[in-house]
Length: 149
Image (cartoon, rainbow, N blue to C red; front, side, top):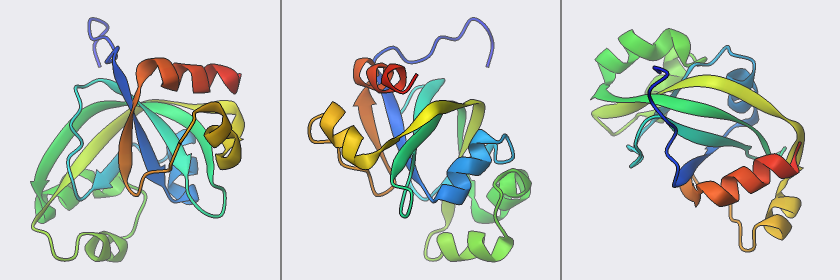
């Protein structure tokens, strides 16, 4: 991401992740998130990292700096080593589709305190963790991040 690029000022993406993947992103080990569907975003966009069961909490943020869709062989070749999963997990996840999407991630930042789901629902009326990803207004996303500081 060049310095001239600004984060999308209007919205953020909430990514639902298995806890091990959310933690790997925050540790800087996982720099690519692979998805079956393409989120409709402008890059760069800030992502909120929501860890699913058993944690069920917002753990941190990162920036989606690039979105790349490709056939599965090319996707694995280009991004497999940065996705922190085995080739078997990759094949199982993408079973039944011919292409996938890589979200290149940068600037991981853990919240000083995770925000549990019950608190997310209190702080943002009607918050529902997405199955894969969802969108949230930048104002609301920033409020959640600031409340964890």
